[in-house]
Length: 319
Image 1: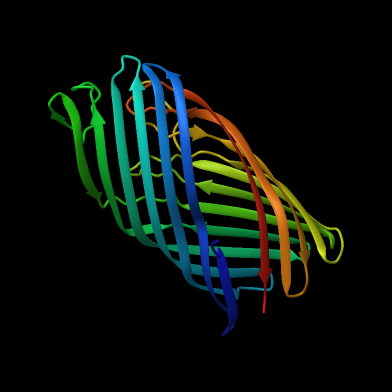
Image 2 (image 1 turned 120 degrees about the horizontal axis):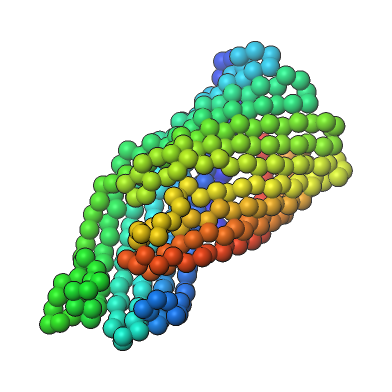
């Protein structure tokens, strides 16, 4: 259970000063998979354990430029810790085998500046614009690999060495390579036709980035939402959204390509609130289809379908 946000604001001169702590990404994942009847492979076992946590902490300042226009800026310290353990067993149709174990650990620090404008021409409409980009200053990735194979020189992993007809041996690698993040431009609109009804829309644009790990393509995501006050203390919310992949389309002539799956989703929630607190229960569902390459070093492409359902409870308080 990870507290994902804490924030506070106070008057400072003509504007407001804020301090906040946020966890935009926190993943604990355990995967046990088995694939059969692949080309040249009779049995393929994969075990994966992932811990990946990103934390932001920083300060904000906002002030009014006019009666209808407000400006704000935030500067976050970005930190990330990731640990990945992968264990794989491949039994080929000719009875040759490969076994590998990989332990990957990454630590990175950087900063994230955010600029924002909010325009409210009247009491029924607000338009927001934000610009943000994460800059990684330090990154250290450590990889420990061990593999055993009886493939002689055909298809052997680079970290293996030939020992009496078998490839076996550990390897330790370190890399200072830094992730590169795209510039993100977000345009948001909120419209209040009545005091019980709110409509919202979001456009998120991410630029293309050349990255040491994989090149990220430019993408555009869209979201629409509605909020209805059932009573003075109950709110019903719903929305639809896109979550497009920033990975390139998979090519039939290349290997070890990242998966490419575009998602479409819906969300529904119900909230109960008072002057000082709120409680929300809801779910998010997303699905889509695409392509992937399950086996490393093989050009074969698999069709992929992805579906996720997230149930959540959240609460907040203000003082």
